[in-house]
Length: 339
Image (cartoon, rainbow, N blue to C red):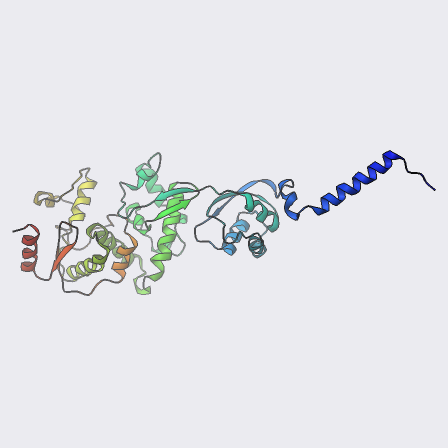
């Protein structure tokens, strides 16, 4: 019979103990030691509102996983319970299998910044959202980039930055970087989802859409209370249909702003400015929107109130008194002034 020496016995015993310990470890224990994926990290942008399948396709587009394996990654995201808790932002992920990609996402932290677009933002305040502020040329170059807008919207877009800005929907955005590119992309996509999709087909021409954008911008500046926006839209339509001058104070303020002067309260002398934006002098609409309209202003243009009103005057609380005759309008003015 072969005799066992002590050293050999110890080696075998330790080997068996080590094996037993290894097989007893939970399956995920090795995840912290085995690197997932190969090569350098690749950027993948996950946008707000994306579901697991849409997010998985972004990893395929970025070359992190092989084309056609998005469905497999979506299943792994569900297996790791990531389908409901994958946050928007910019992820840096190495190339690998769908399983390896899901493993990386378990520990990955997306890069997120906050950008707030306020209703009423115009070409003068938009550049100030960024640090450093955009120059006029930089802003115009950004809005000229059609690839930043939804493909469905591009054929309908007007040319100028001043007008294209109206097709950004104000909101607080959580984006990878607070850059002009990221803000325009996020805000124009939101506009298409919330507004563009519900505009009737007969209104989806470049000319009609520009007119709607201008009207929405006027309503944005004129209405403080959301419930009045459809009514003001109705007044604007009535005056336009009767070939009346719109006589909207907000356009006079904007006309002076383009001249470098701030007007807080429109006086009679301010109405004399020679400008294509001065609706006290020009017929119809100004040539471009005067600001970035809110969702409610767009909805007011899409579904204006049917009314006989032709005039309105603001009260101290921002609400308006409406009238269908000029004499009624004068009476409302006296009422507002306490006479």
